[in-house]
Image (cartoon, rainbow, N blue to C red; front, side):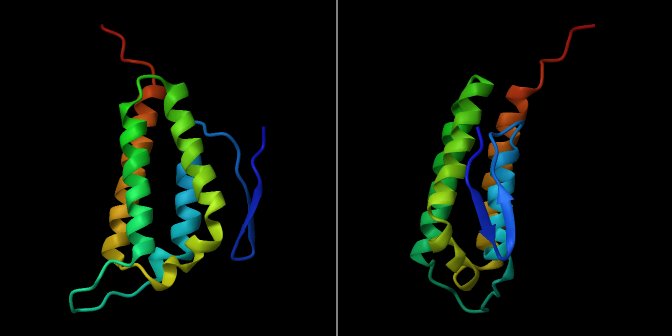
Length: 130
């Protein structure tokens, strides 16, 4: 099964079902590469933009669901659900470049990395006793 082709800044990305955490990495990198990474920080305290807050909340939600999984099938479904959510929100998420700070970008990347780590642990066979 192939998911839709998405155009991020002139680059077409075909999203395929996740293997070992790759769907979230692809989607997160595409969204953040076009958005959060390029924002600049202000020295004064900043309000959290509602879109940034929503994205970080969704990433936390999907990370918590994925890390609660006990099977690779479950974790794969959670990651695919996250990818589908990002595809559905791609137009709105393109505004992140104007709204997020580097610290918010780092927080989002950390959540994505944690979700990928949980999926990877389920994908790897347990070590054999010697």
